[in-house]
Amino acid sequence: MGKCTIDHSYGDVLAKLEDQSDFMPDALVQKTYKFLQQTISQEAVNELFHLLKKYDLATDSEREKRNQEIENMTGR
Image (cartoon, rainbow, N blue to C red):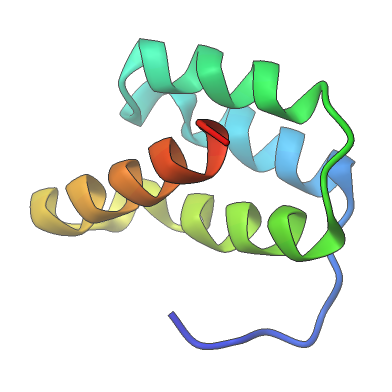
């Protein structure tokens, strides 16, 4: 994914996660909500927003890639 110069807010990410949660594995959704309860860097907020953006429109292989990136991010 290309780099975006817009800083997204926690609220942006929470709204995007809520919008996309029906299309994501339940365990990953819960792990992501828990991750967002921590203090995370602006870079992580932006990256997570872009992984969630248009998740519902992604191919199965793209979703798997995004799932893995979210897993890696939230597992820190």
